[in-house]
Image (cartoon, rainbow, N blue to C red):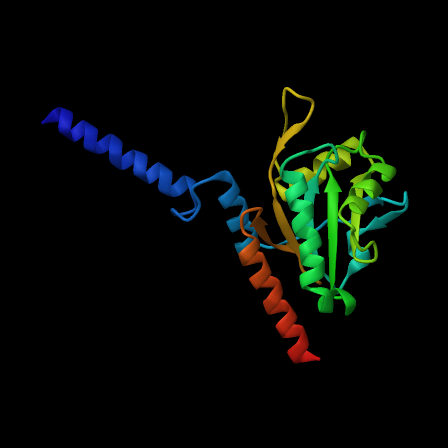
Length: 207
């Protein structure tokens, strides 16, 4: 009997810890918790100065009153980064009306700024036939800033044994107000399209 009671107590404590540690059972992975946190508590994006594929500096806040879709890449990546960029190109095409109305921008931020020079960033965009008017590739201007950006978006980047990285993959949505309001995983392209489609509908109805 004592053994049974002890087992039940351990089980109850374990379930309670899981419940509290996963936002009331809503998030069962660190990635899901990251997405849920932003949905419930949007965050104002700091005024970082980034360097784009032309070697020019800019701030995300320069694109005020626009929705911005952000992904994180490194140009020598041969796996998930290619998929992310391919989907970004599809988004450009699918939501051309929003792009042409200057309501939607795309931003690919490299977390490997030492290797990803402006030239390499431009080559990366060119590989995907990007429209440079609405899709920018950029890198941070210092190691400290690079860390601050990754920390803010809670993007995990771990060097692998081959000179590359294992990293979080997804699409981060910044509202016209400059707040990070949503994160969609690389596997959530259907949900992302629906989100942007609703934005397009709202924009059309309000015009």
